[in-house]
Each structure stands twice: as structure tokens, then as C-alpha cells.
Image (cartoon, rainbow, N blue to C red; front, side, top):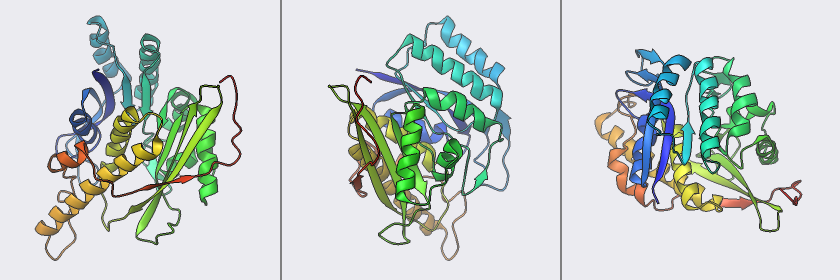
Length: 316
């Protein structure tokens, strides 16, 4: 059966970030994708210069009204990412609630793009909108460590902290939470970063089951832009195909990104001989990775974790 995704993210003319990073892999994996651009830039902000426009709520409403007038509001998934306008984000919330009323089974995948490594790169006024309006209606959430800390007001200094933060985010709304990157030390050494995930599902007897995983992901000595957008899109696809198996969904998601990054680095080194690659040379090699997107060889295995403090609940 055909699945349709509405993807509301940034757009760049050149490179792979936002909708450019999310739409192609979703289409390769069999999804119909409609996209709305929260911003339209010449290139991503990792370059020295960029130009473009930021969409506001009124402009978003015009696009959505056209869909409504033509009765084109039937979606199975909503995917949102980078936004820097408060009114735009507030209107996105209204649209998602309306679409969920049309389809109670609609799944909302939210990448709460706000910042990283202790710094916000969107206006701070967006944080309360995410906390109070967005998170309660999200089904799948993909923050990095800094964003998870912002959303809960809690620091993550250990794996136990991360599990508790993800549990708190579950309580706020999402049934699946993946912390896509963290500063936690990996048991495999400094050449790896740690990602963690947690998924709550309701069993037939009404009790809650939680599956928690940790992934030790190989690092590269380079800065890539668009990998978070790619992560959210792939997680959408693989949780659709493995709805009650977060371990498998995460392995396929992270392994795909691993293959894309390896191919990107291999290309960058061929054109940047004897120097560090430029932002342009580190643009994700997305099209060249089509086969890996369709059928990723598992390069990163997820380890199942215990989830202390979660009591099975009946009648949920």
C-alpha cells in the first residue's frame, strides 16, 4: 500500500540538507513525498556565504490552503526539521493537528533542530514552542544530546541519564526517541560516538514494553551537514518497515549513514589531495549511495539495553 509523507524542512539549491537530504532516500524506499520548504537558501550555512528566504506562517498557510481546496490532505507521515520562524512552527503544529484529525493513524516524525554542542542556532523563542506544542503531538523524536537536554532541562552525563531523559520524553508524547549523537564515551574508544534509542509499545494485555538500544558509531574527522535530516528520514522509513523492532530500524538507519559518509569521504580525499576537504567537497554523496539506501549492509550493530524504573502499566 502506498504511503505518503509531507516533509516540512529547509531547502538548498546546491547540496544535501533538509528536504534535499530527506526526500530522495524516502522515495528510493518507496514513499511518495510532498515537500514544503521552511527556508530556501542557496546552500547550507556551513559555507562562508549563503542567501535566501525564510518562510513565515502566512506563506505556509497559502500552500496548505491549496492542498485543502483540492482535498489533498491525506498523509500517513509528517516529517519536520529545521525551522527558524516562531509563527511558522506554530502553524506547523496547527496543520499537524488537523491532519491527525483527518487520519488518527498518522505518524509525526520530529527532528527538533535547535542546536548542538552547547549552542543554539535558531532563535531561543522556538524552544518553548517545541516543549509545549510540538513534543506532545510527536510520535517519533530524533534530537541530538544537546536538544534532548534542552527539551527536558536535564543534563546527560551517563547512559543512565540518557535512558531517563528518553523516558521523560516518552511521558511527554513520543513513543520512539532516538538521541542521534552524544558526548558520552564509547566502550570502543574515542573513534566512536554513542547514539541511543528507546521505543515504547503497547502489548496485547495493555502493558508497556520498552526496547532501548545503544549504537557505537565510527567517527570521521570531518564536519558533515545534512546527516541529521537523513537520519530522521531513514528512521521514518525503517520504523515503518519494522514498527516494533527499534534495534533493526536503528541498525539499518545508522548503517546507511555510515555507508554514505564513507563514500563521501572517499570522494573528498580524491579531490582534496594534501589538504582538508572544503564544504563543497563534503556534500553527501547521496545519489551515488542509492544501493546502500535501498538495502544497507549492517555495518553498525545496536546493543539492547535494560530500562530500569519503567513499570508495566495496564489499560494504556
